[in-house]
Length: 359
Image 1: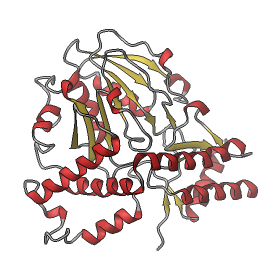
Image 2: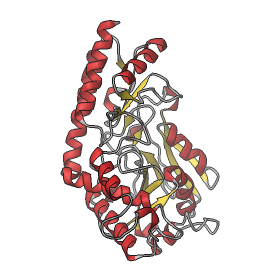
Image 3: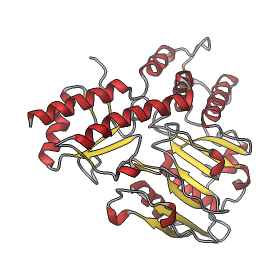
Image 4: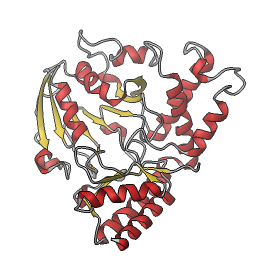
């Protein structure tokens, strides 16, 4: 069977060359005589994989001196708890911008551990935009300010990042990390699940500024304590060894493409193809406000639920799968992360044109 174009929001598509390389090394990694899945994390052979993964990631992201990179388990959702447990220990207060479903869930979880204030929200407008800086009211005594840079479900993103004065900004970048450039020095902490632009599910990358380590609550479990993980090279317990290896392959693929500048240009091309069609279509319409549209998650509808379902079925028959929108919003969603080739988006647009003409 031929491979399909997988528009899933996550776990998402992985580059075919990455999968093929992993397949070739599955039973025997290089000259080690065993699979990565069999390796002890305490051996030099795995420590080399871990070090290479971290180094390539730092280079791609442009991580400056004064920051550590952690490769942890539990995905981004586990960091919804880890963030307040590590940081909400000064005033015990934190600000959150509620710009989408995962931003909302992050704030809800943080309320277990501190006094959480919603500094701005687009929830009442069905998250069709992200609040601009002039709409955000930051507290003066917050331990940190939390934002979500891309809204996976509703298809929005920050075009311009808000500033929070001297308060460190914590960003969930799960759905657009390594898809467009960011100045890491503008953040105190960045975290992201790997399953969209880096590798398979189950791995979470955390970038944390040195001065924010050592602030954890006494109640913080050691697996969630960033300082403990930093001191133990992300190995307080057995890490997701195979997930880290797969991330390394994905990062190598991205590096060899030309790194972040190259993939950013490709992602802009893909998004423009799809949005240009939506803006001129008689049937399909984008749902996010234009000035906040995501590069990685394109949401759209026909205006008729039956027609939406019919198109999803039609597309799947043509090898374009996982286009059904999130259950919270319906419609369609095309997640066009780094591993989605331009050809996949062109084929999607062609099928949308054909479906529109038929209707």
